[in-house]
Image 1 (cartoon, helix red, strand yellow):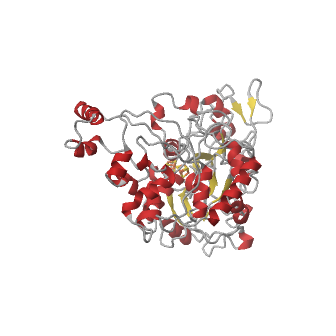
Image 2 (spheres, rainbow over the protein chains, first blue to last red):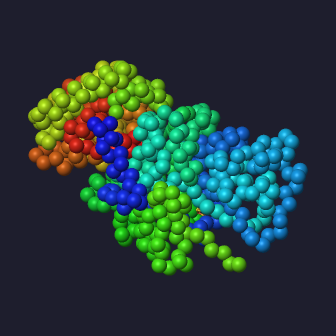
Image 3 (cartoon, protein in one colour):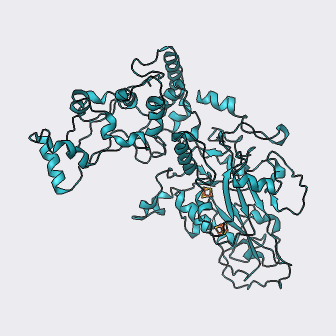
Length: 333
Length: 211
Ligand code: SF4
Ligand code: SF4
């Protein structure tokens, strides 16, 4: 039956723009990220580590992009009027993104996870090495001119990761979430290669062996499994919290109320940059924001009446139909 | 499902507990199909209306408990409702073990001369709970709630009497009221759950249970 379920429902939850987008979800969890409000404090990322049993992998593995931060803060250096930044040639930078790194340094390909900024990177450009500080280089940073982009799984409705999984370990749930079933995952990593946002993280090691030395293992969240090596994982929109909220609502024979619960990152953000809710509930905060910014689901291009509105979805032109709307950062010139 | 499951069962389970058969995939699939056919034909359980009890047997290891608690005397002879002691079952994920105070509520006066009760009283006077051992355990990656199952099979089940709740408990725990210390007699693996969910039209989304 389960196989049957997978075969018959395979495409049911995966409708792209050409089919008019999604339909018939029970819920439709979505998020709004206001980049104007984000101060890049990384609290959301830390909250995600705590909530979702994410291991801290250490510097060496981090430099190899083997880190597991489901929520990562991407940094862009976008001040147009800065003096060209001179990186000192003696700066203690381990990893250089360059085709010809200085003798003794490692070249790192911009296409590795985390370098969503790849389009912005030009060898020899201003503050070039420092822009990739996201990799954990030891380079000096500019004093100002950074803008931040919190990046978690976009829970696409026509997700590119789902159809490539050979064992259906990743699939779409009736809640409009992009699910990952750890037990079923065989670690082929097709999904991660197919994710345009680079948000899937692979357990290259049995991180639990050293990530939580006693007594730190007491902090592990019992509501979700600790993953072993060989499985893929990614932001789940804190499905364990969704589950609890839905169970409670079910026990009281009512619907889940807006704002009744929030994901760990949303709960933690000190500036309220993140908003979480059910896009199917027209009264929820997220759907009001989506409506206000005239961003619609099931589209590859938004047709806004008011071009000043800041809402956009990342890479929606690829017909992934993501559930996260970003509000563009506006700067005084 | 059985195929994929039998490939990887026990693989992520850090406790090392085997959670499924290691038979070849096609055999498991075949067994699944046969089981479904049998299930589809079987009538509803005599005592629990609107329910098809799950099928499956298991021979669990005997678990040594600090006190040999006689479920049979409590639930069968004295007809105490399961939810009198396992009171959290109806309102939380776990059924819970009653606090010693609940035991003492009765055993201050009842059967105080019996050796097991004397042992219990010792614990009570030392202000130390007996360290009961878990008998029915599902792996860490499984989300299971007692409350929703009780809601479906007892409280929201038309024609079901709460007094007979032990029949519902028996779906997964076996006839505990005929045991002294509880033994695991049902496999409680994914096939067992999935077959029951199918027969009783439970949710069938992977993320409903996998976490
Ligand atoms: S929604 Fe939950 S899992 Fe996703 S980034 Fe936020 S805290 Fe992490
Ligand atoms: S917690 Fe809020 S302000 Fe801080 S980095 Fe995350 S989104 Fe930005």
